[in-house]
Length: 231
Image (tube, rainbow, N blue to C red; front, side, top):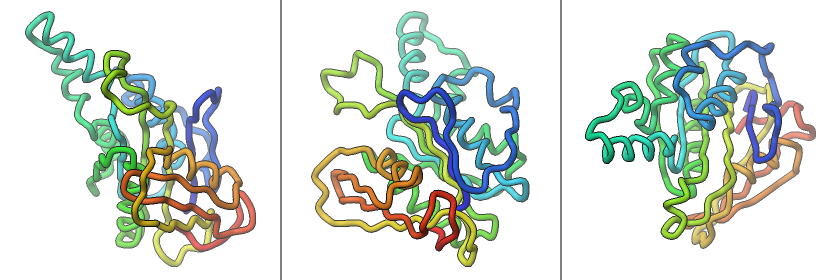
């Protein structure tokens, strides 16, 4: 993995590591009509974009920008109509589409929603894309708590988080080595993205339990930004 950037609970600034390009301001089209979690997700993705060809983009999220959808439902109930602009941005992969437009990327993108394990399966999808594309792949993962109305029926929400990873194609030796192992029969609903982030930030290993699998992450190098086999 070549680079990562993320917004985590309680953070006041974007954290990042690996081969990060010099800071660039977020383009205006990526700042208009975007929810707070959407902007943080785009800031993380923008930080890891390479200067060369646009990598394949994979977006993963359990709920997406659901606050936008919730507001649209309220508007529809009250007025019988919704804003076309807001509706176009309410689809699950809207942020990936915006990023592709701004960067001129024409390689397409994939959106993954797999419940509590959305990050893990998104990372597997991104690794597969990186193995097939010389430009590598970017995983953009984000989630925020659901509106208060859903608290009685929804599972406990994880803290707000946005995390972007740039995965290198096979054969690259630059970046952070990240290894993943799956254990069958997961029984929990722990934060996969948070556990992976602990390894990116320097921990030797971390794990999380999803409803389908247990997920174990391990560094493949000896330092926060050292060389190693890319995951």
